[in-house]
Length: 453
Image (cartoon, rainbow, N blue to C red; front, top):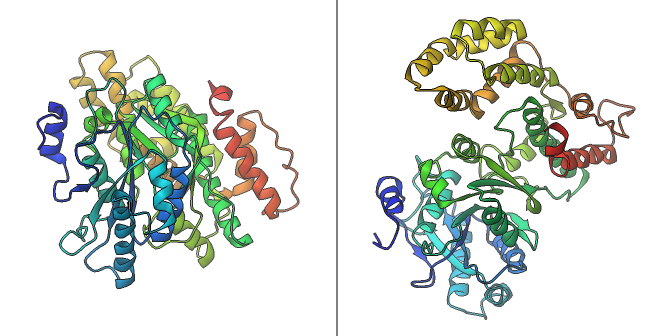
């Protein structure tokens, strides 16, 4: 382990670091920012992403490295392993300035960006079957990035999560760097939009999924939740100190982004970077059991009614509970449950199922002052418990309702009357569906904070 790393980094790597794999990169060069990209069988998409990143315009005083984690299992199909070999050759060609390998090599080298890659695909280095997945792949890249940061510089050392099937705007790198340094962010999410491409069925599928994501975020914002941020794995960033504070990326095979951001939010304010965008692919995919690819697959399979959302009344109940729980007045566990029952009997049932009374008594007995109680409130009723409450209300009292009815009602909470509200059917035509999505995008970004705060 390099002794020029800060002691806190050395301690983190010794206890939690992924040390089996090594980074192939320029020798002895140090960086201010690392974009970490896990990839499995993504050769064609890597070319597209490299082209997109190469077009970024940023202050060259900042040293930026793109770290690809090329991974597969020992049991992965031969086609997957062969695709990964091609990816490794491409990245190695960039590292060695082999302009003859592919036109993207020259373009990337001219961009001022640096390349690095971790081989988690070749024989003997494959990702472990039991713990392997996108979470571990991200962790490997982010842990390794800690070893190549230039900690002597006063600027923030930033870790950015991106995916190999994305493209980004030309101001992506500069905007993230500026946002972190100017706003003193420790953690942030970056604005995203799925391209509405492909045939009509594919467009409908991605509209349904993105509406689902943005509606839930909007409902949490309306309710006043501190966990009201998107959880899109390709649109997350944090500084190295925050990363170490929460003991790094988790090894979840899916939903790693949700748990990572939840841990960050328990210690830091999660900023929102709205002036640049990530464009995740709206494709079908087998790579993870959750997320965009899985939801697109599900839409095509017709196994679920995709035009459903949580009843807005669930967010009204959440809002009342948060106002009660996070008020300055500290109540006993019994009093909280009694008041919860007045808000909704199912809220009280949920809190009882979550062992709230006993947990709350422990919090009160272990907290030295009101400040510690406030912190423990935020940590006990976290993002996961919030989601579990919404699911409990869905199953016990407020079943899912028509997507566009839910959106119409949610818009009224924000004093927005959509021009397309008077639709003629429960599921409007594609152009109207797009308008609903555009309204949500606008509300989640430009107008998002000013309407409620």
